[in-house]
Length: 253
Image 1 (cartoon, rainbow, N blue to C red):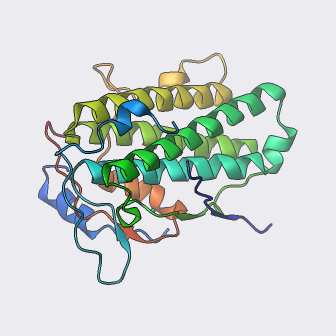
Image 2: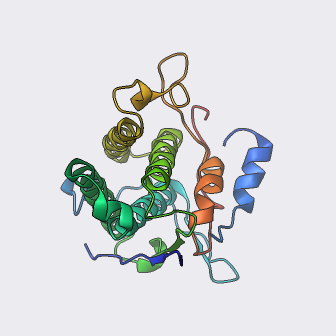
């Protein structure tokens, strides 16, 4: 069966470790996450933002520095998640799924689209409408996912949702603007609910909704460095871009 290559339709709407740092600078993906929130957009002219670095010599996009870089980083993940659920809704598993499971997939899709559009609108406002500083529409390759298989779809969904939660947890302390941090906290709480919902579908009536693989001994959720996130999500992302200017963590991740 020919597997889909998804092209996103964009609606207008460190680590301290040297090796990890070097690895992040090396990142160049060839394969790789609220429409108009007044709260977030109100921060558009904040001085926390740093100027966009010079474009890459090959013309590929760099996520940028400071808070804009982190927001573009989150936008990449939200684009991926929205594209994934969009593809799922067109596949064989979804068409034959029980109504309750369809409703969950629909909810997750809608949330990811809202997150994606919200972040894009926020970045645009922050950079005063300069489209060149906003992560462009990415193309994704979901050929590794069997959209006719419930297990393949849900296992991939679990991976993406867990990765999304870890990404927000690992990037939050790099944000300078308190309002953005608040918004990121609200988004990650939704992503965590998504992860729990998927785990409950995979293993009903179990404690897997917050398994030991994502909750540590202190009852805290995982956090992931951008390099770890990109390594996991990279195989799904076709569009090349770099993440050379992302800020360092402030409290250690």
